[in-house]
Length: 254
Picture: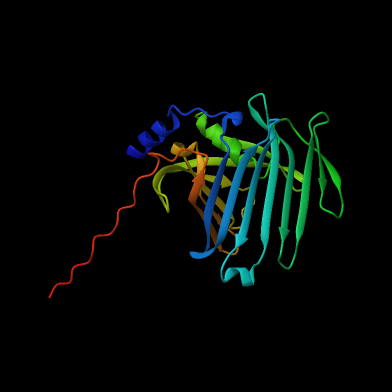
């Protein structure tokens, strides 16, 4: 019962955040593979003088994992606010440095409700619906939907060569420990029609404009990737985090 009350209070908090009001920010996450430090994830949202917004996500292996999986994964989405909603202009995915490079670009044509897709092999065109998003920018849409007190989330995503539906549900609220301190977050799960053991869970913090402060992805083989926020600029963190209690020193008895 207490958890339900806490969840209700978080969802009806006075924060209101539409798509165009999401502040520019820069976030850095520590990435682990099966509990071992494996690399870092950097995300950045910026706005140019014409109001075009660019959301980037860069993941790179670090340390010993860089020898076994040296891939650099870069995603870039440009978008504008349309009727207070996110409308993507372009999306670019690039994976380089490993055994198999990958390239995919999407260009949205909203006059024709089409997206032009190029993978450097066989370009093609996909018909889309109103409010279609790309694989990266939907997470910003989720932030504004959480701030609007929504409790169910369904997004149409131009994912590769077809339209997919991403369904996300709220599971609970949890205190999440990060290098910045402890913070209360809403725990969500993305449902997959054919999961085959794959699962994506994320934790969004109301105190940080519902920014994801932790992500956890489980592959069908059982490998678990986690990313936890460790640095943040552009979003006010004052009073958002609780200090992590230090352990009292151990006393030796004789």
